[in-house]
Length: 82
Image 1 (tube, one colour):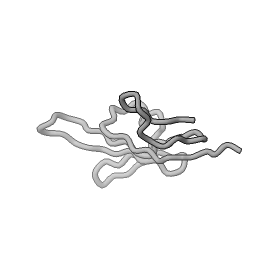
Image 2 (cartoon, one colour):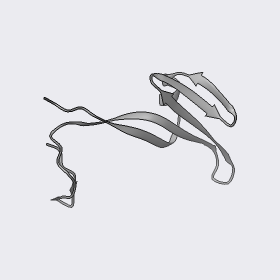
Image 3 (spheres, helix red, strand yellow):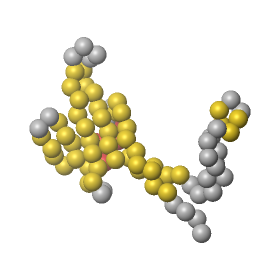
Image 4 (cartoon, one colour):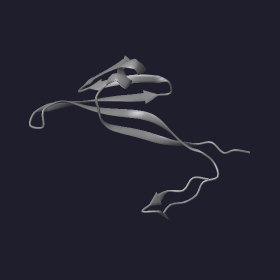
């Protein structure tokens, strides 16, 4: 079982099955705090796309994983053991 602990006390639910997460989007900020530009990578099935203003193009998983991520978005995937 997995339980979330905070200061030695259990605070969350216990799960009898693993909690897995899939990365589906990455936001990247390029530039400085005062001046910069955001791009977004999104995944549909196994294909990754790069969104840069009005341009959307296919890209590779390698490019996504090598990017300097600002925000990561995950979707929970639950696998129940029998």
